[in-house]
Length: 299
Image (cartoon, rainbow, N blue to C red; front, side):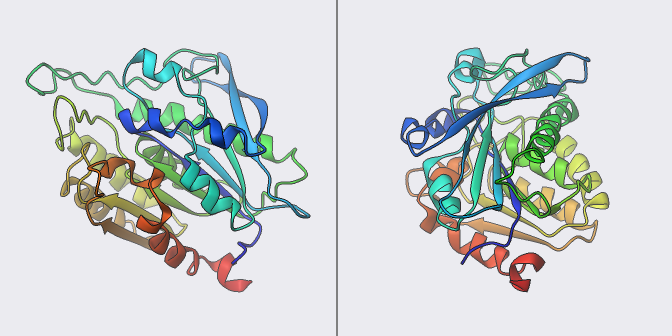
């Protein structure tokens, strides 16, 4: 099935799983690089290194913009070379969809400081020691989505009329926040394991201040008008099995066409990194969602 011309903004996030998403194999699959300026809330302009993949054939093509996650520690963030995993890349390219994978400011070779730092900290016992600011994280990351969409308007191979946002962990949170803005051309989104404040090493399955995120998601739900899919695994080490359901329930009160899917436990224990695993674990849910998105059905 070939998607109708649409942009898929795919946000990948998560700490330890994000480091494993970096793929030199994907970079060798015909990717090109560009530098996109991002105007930050401070007024500074960061330069965002972006890798994009265009399928063979005649465009313009639907586009996946894959916004990555948040590895723990400065060293982890410095190692980010590519946000999109090989599994996601293969899935979308196989549908004739171009894939754009920006590396946000403060990560990898992109310039800028760590503007997404929420201030979350855990002590040795796994307890939160400060009140994080997750709105700061989401607000900074959303600017990269809007900057990427603006850049795409100058790309002849990209059809910017139909946009599908997709995200993973902090990137999933970014996707939900961006999806609430009514951005031109955005027709829906997919949120993989969206959230912030988790630490599977110090506090497995129990994140910091989940009620703050619940309130944020409830607010995003009030202004979201596009269909959306939320996918979490039962053994998500960052949020646990229950909290994501509460987040989605709060969001769903806004009335958008939304679906929550909780996949079975990922066999290797990496439930949080579901989106980078074999497509057999998540593609059926994504395929079912795409079949209901209006522009897909119309084709």
